[in-house]
Image: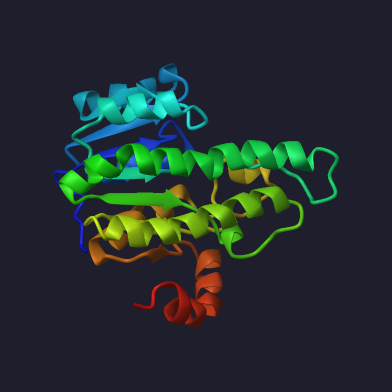
Length: 241
């Protein structure tokens, strides 16, 4: 289903920086009526508030806390597009001493956070025939050894996103799974990526993919290399009717 950003109300988790901030700005530049900035620290969005005024509304949100996400959904009953962008990534190989603790933290945010958001907003998105956008990663389809736990958490998130595509789709809600490669963000720098695409490649790609009614988005040049190899499997196994 094609969804235009123009005149829509959106909510972006982790909207204060990196990809989340770029998504917020792209949505507003394409005519969104309002964007909820869902962040852990409500003081972190002051620059966006000063720039966009009453077109943005900051709301506190902690993806690891069900009560927080329920309150978020209650405060944003008019939302038509939910972008679950917030996530964490840590350097950890399968043999790292802290691999188990790291994986637990990443699962809590990257997979259980998605589950909490999807369930809390399902009714609202159904009522507006809206869309859920999930930020996954190329790491969801290939494990990177020094980011093994992150890759595992994103693989789980991608699997869940496929299930949400079907179940939310039955309720008239579109789902978009976004799979960036290295992006020039704080998270990308922490992961050791020195050459990376600008975050606007992701945000503009989301606008276009929602308009096109796509399920997958591989936005940057590295991601498109993954898409080229993955396309046949996806067509025959993931998006086949």
